Length: 132
Image (cartoon, rainbow, N blue to C red; front, side):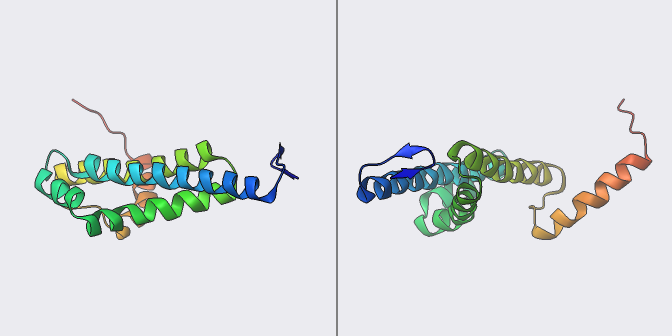
């Protein structure tokens, strides 16, 4: 029996292989969720980060989106490294954006902010920014 170029002797071995891979994706996604919480609010709201990491319900809610995205990307792309890499890029990127938005505006990133990315790129092409 072949699956992704790997020969398995039994169906049980193939299912065990898939289960281990999915658990690996879930574990990496939990790490990505925790990293995005830490990066997103470390310096400016450390008590919030501490509360999120100590409360199992809040931690699970913050890790649920990276887990679902990680599994979806893994099933779509078929590679653990590619799926978890894109997952990390998305969620840690949002954590970094949240960090800088908290630093400059004292406001967290919201879903509506994602709609402003295209507008910001259009506006940045119209002006020449000169740092002094």
